[in-house]
Length: 316
Image (cartoon, rainbow, N blue to C red; front, side, top):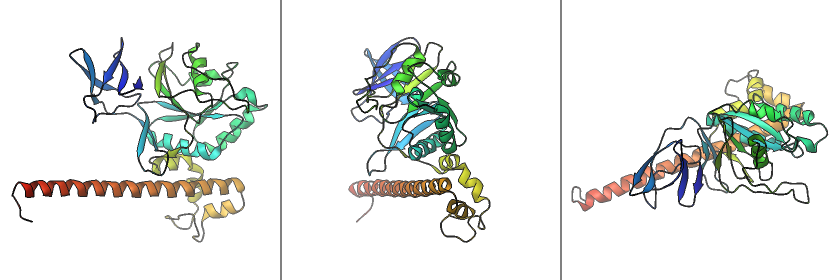
């Protein structure tokens, strides 16, 4: 249900329990949303195993490192939250790529719809970027549009909410729950929301659905992505069907339908630039990941060779 300091808050269907790791360096590291096998040893509850996941929402850790950070497990829907008065199309593309790769279904939630004169125009702009994903405009202040989110939250359904700090995720959860189950903060002087969530946690709604709140993330880089990239940029793939070469990279190849379309349409040009940037980023991550696996393999065989030599089975 939530990660604590050195432990996890788990629910066995009847009660909440605090479960600890079996060692200081646990090989089992569950995240919020995981199903886990727990056991009681002398009155202390321990996590023994993590069950296989049906979906895994991950991002590359912030900074220059290439490490996977699992944000949520076993979620059915991911609500990508963006404020109506400050939509960032390039961030939406990154988040959508991660969701399409996770095994969950995306739902783009345009929050704070009461802050703009025409929220439906904003929805149209978001739909033009988030192809294939449902888009809903909501106001946690007056409850407008909440039914479009609750429609995706049936009994036993888990929805994770992601987005930058202050976008209104906690306020949305409180509005959906019908009571203040999470802390929120007053709007800042510049009209922006304040960061309040510090850990990922599951909230059980009255109708049996579950919402997973996440801390705001300043930057968002997908962890994996060819499948997710194809889902996010379905329009690029559709245009690519008209390219002269089947393996066209949409750079400088002759007869590239995508480049031709981008030369006369600023929106397509921006989409193509984003597609190229994410392609390069994901390729870099894949190379770093492969290099790390090779390094780990070398270390394993080096350690094994040293052990065999120490035992006298081979000579230097």
